[in-house]
Length: 268
Length: 274
Image (cartoon, rainbow over all chains, first blue to last red):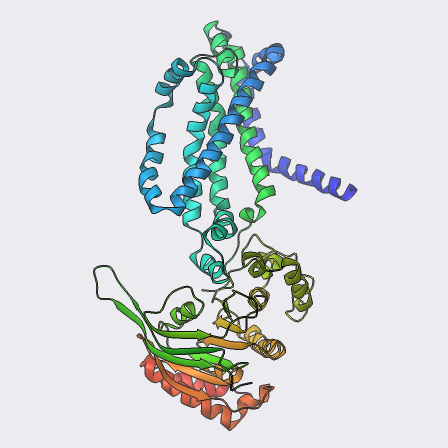
């Protein structure tokens, strides 16, 4: 038990050392920003100093919790919906060439729809509740997940599939025992891309009309020239996006550890 | 026993691939071949002669265009009598050695617990003792190949199809694996059809060696190897061994039709231990 704790501590230390340079750059940029705004006397509504932003964050903390929770919920549900839909579509495309010809063009088209144009329409159709935000998150996340999964399924080693078929496996078994695990590395990279966009999707949805959420909160702050608060919310959104990304990464390592191993092929 | 039906009999097997917008390609034309029960039979031939196509047909991955393939039935009801081991080890990278080895029982709806028990029994003989929970990428090339063979053996089918299983191994490992394979084969009492490029390997392991022609492949020559079993390393130096090897090499080189004939024979001759 202590060994595991020690190993975890060592791991955390390693992470810190690795993150060191990035943290340094960030700190230096913050320092310059602080100095410039103070020395030049830039007004806080135009560009607040980092210290002012931190204060604004602390001040906003009681309200931030509620809005953050709402945005996170929309993001989570939308992401889950996208994952489910992408799984179904990618499996269909993989199993049937008719489905591929019918659905692949739609897949690309789904990505060409400008979300900014769609968001107000969704608000008109579905009101100011969570549903339109969830739909936007799902739309944003669906494409990278579906494309990466379909690609991963297509690239599964045909020899491995032949081997399992020679053992008497049917289509279903080939799909679940060979193709899906083979597609895991590709699927995970698509899921990470989707995760890093997902929060922004929810915020855009909230922007065009919402009763709560970080997008709404930021819009209010912006309209009342509380620029420091806008920056504080931006920081929260960034942190949530990074959190989503890391969550997928951690989950991926747990569920599909082989996807993180570089396998060197033995043989021709 | 040996007068019973053979483990495998191919009669006039042909395979032609239809190519889009071009003349169809004949990969195999009229292959006759037989593997007696319990025999170790090798198949040598120039690259691209359709050896792998032939194994694919026997493994039931594809249908022959003409001819018949008779396979003695497997012990398990409904199962085909053939266990196929392709050229690459094709261990599933997300499965441990044990999970890979018992894949057949899992896919074929066999008794998984029994497969695991049998795998555990065989692990030491396959040099994999203590590695049952290792993932394939942590194993050496020889170990991966042995794990793949364990998976093949555990299918429990009377005929093993081995497609150049040692092709990617270094010479030393390869030599060890050949001796080991003979031991395992003697213990399992299975019939083997073994594809290789290496004539010396074929002679040393086999009761009979078939030479195939260039594409479209058919059997050009079959030679029985009358060396006693168990085979020993020193037999490679015996004149009978060299004579068989020479005959096969000549047939094969005539098929390859390329100049390196003298050089190749020279190196081969030097390889024999004194």
